[in-house]
Length: 433
Image 1: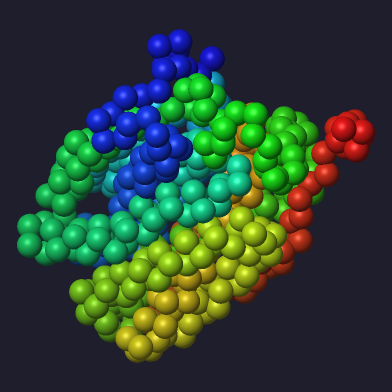
Image 2 (image 1 turned 180 degrees about the horizontal axis):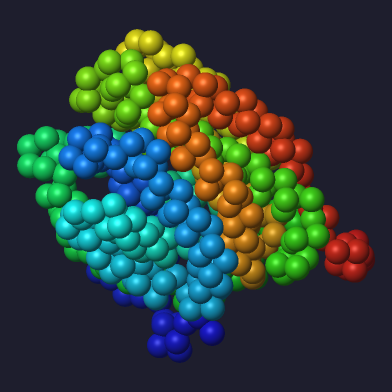
C-alpha cells in the first residue's frame, strides 16, 4: 500500500487550489530534485582540478569514486524501483534529501582518499533516492497522453543545474573555496528540497483523479498499447527483446554523458588550454541548448516513435563527443556544447517516457531499476578507463574517439528497440474486445 487513507484527499496548498491537474505539481517537484541531481553529477567535474591540486591524485584516481558510485547506483536501481512501487515517492525522496545533505557535508569535511569515496557514496545514495528513477516513475504514473512532454519539463531542472548551478559552484569555489561550496550545496538541498518532496503523491487515483487529469468516464483517444494498457511484470519484460535493447543501448549512450561531465573540464583546461571560466561557459551553453531540445523531445516524443527519436539523439551525442576529442579551440568547444546539448536534451524525456509506454505502470519502478543495473559493466569501466587512457597517453583524443564509436553502436540498438508485443493471451483479449 503506497498511501495512507488520510492521503486520499486532494493535498491543499493555497497556491494550487483544486482546479489544476495535480500531475503538474508532481512535475514541478521533479524539476527541483532534478536540479539537485544535476548539481551532484555536473558539478562534480568542477572539483576535480581543485582536488588534484590539493591532494595530488591522478586523473584515474579522481575518476575512481565515480565508477564506485555508478556501481552503487546500478545495484540500488532495483531497490529504488521496489521502494517507490511499495512505499510511494514521498517517503523515498524525503530520505534522499536527508542522506544527500549529509553526503555534501562529508564531502566538505574530506581530508583523505577514503573520505572522498565515503562522501561520494553517501551523495549518490541520497541523490538516487530522490533522483530520476524515482521521479520519472512517478511522472509516468500521472500521465499517459502527455507523458513525454511532462518528462521533458521535469528534466529542465537538470538542465538548469548546468545553466545556473555549475557557474555558481565555480564562483563559490573561486571566491571562497571548494569546501564552502559543498556546505552551501548541502544547506540548499535541505532547505529547498524537503518542502517540495512532501508534495509528492504516488498516483492520481490516490487523490480521486486519473492520468492526464481526464474526467472519469471520458473516452480517451489513445489505444491501450500506446498508453501502456498492459502492465508487464519484471519476468515478462525480461522475455522481450525491447527490454534488452533499451538496457544496453541506454548504458552505452551514458558513456558520452559520463565522459563529458567528468572529463570535459580537465580536457579543455589542460589539453586545449581554455581558461576555467570559459570552460564553465562551454558547459552552460550545453545546458542552455539542452532546454529547447528537451521540450522538442517532449513534443515529438508524444507524436512519433520514441525508439527512432532515441537513436537520432544518441547519434548526435556520439558526433559531439568526437568533436570534443579533436577540439583545439574555444570555437570547437562551443560547437561540441551545442550539438551535445541538443542530443542530450532530446534523449532524456523520451527515454524516461518510453519505459512507461512499453512496459506499463504497475511494475515500472522495478523494471527500470533492473534495466539500469544491467548496464553496470559499461558504467563501471567508462570513467576509470577514460582517466587511465589520459594518464598513459597524455591526451583525451583516443579515449573520447573510442567512446564516440561505441555510442554509434548504442544508437543502432535504440533504433531497433520497438514496442514489445504483450503475451499471447493478452493480445487475444485486445483483439476480442
